[in-house]
Length: 252
Image (cartoon, rainbow, N blue to C red; front, side, top):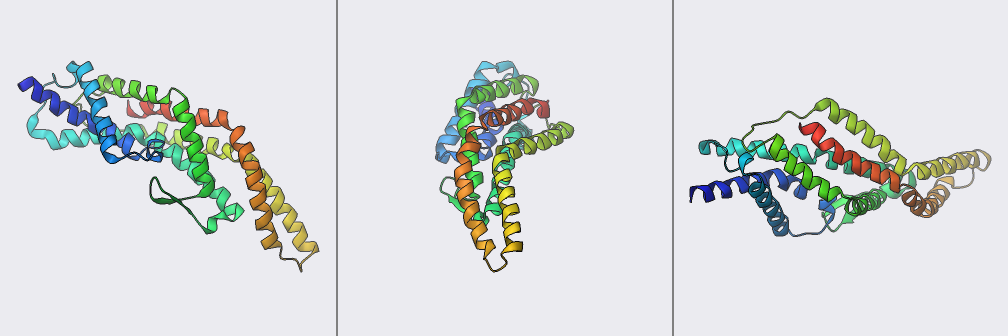
């Protein structure tokens, strides 16, 4: 009975290490999945980890009177493990927002029915494309491997961890640089259109070049967006692999 109680307690604590990824990290937040299903999935994976690694979980000598600190430590570990996925999504959405502002779509935001939040139009398209690439690769399997390795490197009750800030800062700069490449052809097209509109405003000042520019930009973005996504698959793959490879580098 005592061992069973220890197993249940360990499962609940380890689920706090897994749940932040399902709750806050894209691409899982892009899927319209009920909260109950997310919780059950986190508890199921925690059960698998606990039963497969008993020495690092429920067989450890844990101070039961220090449960709040144990739970807080697991939440911090789980948050650290999902930071790279979150920042990659932020970089993609920021680049999409920049395209929206340059095109004129920045006057309105898209209501995402999944997250019930306002998102940039082009950024949302880029985010769902990244999510499709994520699930088409072995990224979910790699996440399972990282969680299993985290149990060995950071067993239950190991205490708080200090994320590697230098690795995190280098990752952020690389992620934003790669995300810029997703819309490179769009930025180039918009720049050439702005240059043409600037010449027209000097030669034909009576024309409403601002209104014409927005219309031309909209058509240009709609025409170049499929090309940009099609030729950026390698960049999407690199972003996904970078986020997965950075997780263990930041945590241990």
